[in-house]
Length: 160
Image 1: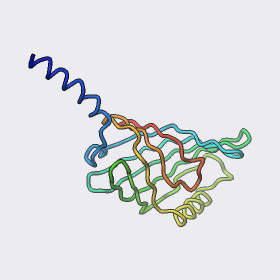
Image 2: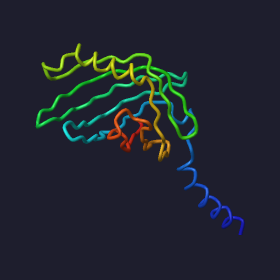
Image 3: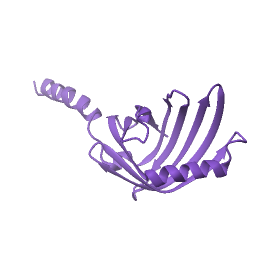
Image 4: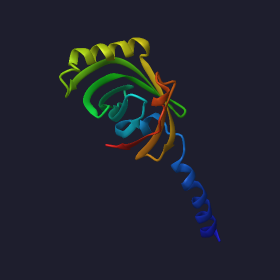
């Protein structure tokens, strides 16, 4: 009888544990998010983010974005660094540095990309993402208060 009760109890608690709100140590490490698509009437994007959350409260991120407009594609890479914290089911980041690293199109120069990135950071230097699902090896997030409402899409992330 004791074995059945233990099996029943474990059967109830294990599924709940998979959806428990993560703690900061659960988030620490490398995550690959995407690709995720942001559609738009004139311009759409496809993004892959590789973010490393450190246990000291800092993060680094490399973002690879493909912009598509009227059949033309431009691929870019940026690097962001800053601080992060976890408050309940919210990951909050504050950017200390954002660097535009490359573009594969001569009309979209690194200088132009950096100026665009600087203007974005001047308007908003932080972001918050709500964790919708978390199991330790993967998570699904959605940004809150995005500068572009079309950018508020669910993003799947996995460790590594």
